[in-house]
Amino acid sequence: MVQSSTATERINTMATRSRIGILEKGGIRHIYAHWDGYPKHNGIILLKHYTNAAKINLLMELGNVSILRPLIGEKHEFDNPNEQWTLAYGRDREETGGKAIKSENETHFIKIADGSFAEYAYLFKEDKWFFCTIGKNNHFIALDEYLSQFPESELYPC
Image 1 (cartoon, rainbow, N blue to C red):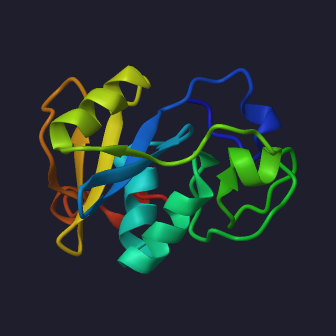
Image 2: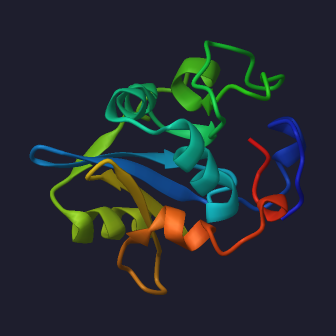
């Protein structure tokens, strides 16, 4: 994938989609993330910046996102975003219908991720991040353990 810094520059590039969720009473609440869903980008951002249920719930309330960033931020221009703020379809492009959805269990969460062409799914449970590669292993593994095998220089600098 070609790396670029703005949403408009990314129009003709391919996305690495993902779903991001949190285990709650009664199921998993989750959102769609369009760009940079691979563990070395979205995974490290989640691991370093979305470290508690309160902040993750704010992300869920934001709804589907174009680009996950270290900060949730405030409303900003979709075509000229603040590079530290998450870029959301509803808040920043005023799209409708992009609210978080609920899955009854991990199997259903993975099925929804697969149906939205996501390559990765991230799940916060037991105060820890887990992820799975959709269509490859379809089971969740600890994100911190997976990322520990890579040098810091290979991870998104957040």
